[in-house]
Length: 124
Image (cartoon, rainbow, N blue to C red):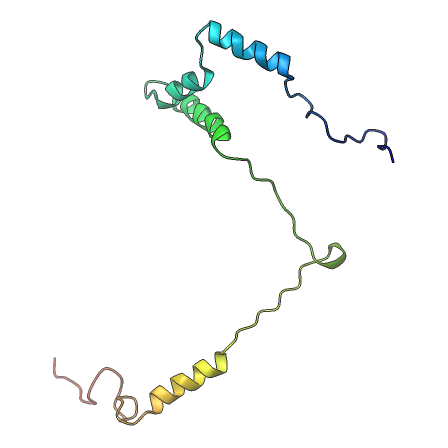
């Protein structure tokens, strides 16, 4: 089964250097003792340079430090919205436990006094 017209399968990505071109670039930089990453890092850290240039150099260096994230779109069945069902387990058990604590004998809530006090208003 062949590829459809205009469809790419496998192979080198468009615009990437082949081995010969990559070797040529590396040897040329080595002969001239030029390190583009070092130059960019120096520019990014040089406070005498304009902030725009420093930011651009830092951003470009950052692209080599971490992989770029791709946008991902999630869809439900047949490309429609995603159905979400929120299930809270143990809610009734939690409410029963709270009711039991409140109604327990000997607690301030059970004594009929307002929370946080003994039922007396202080003169302060």
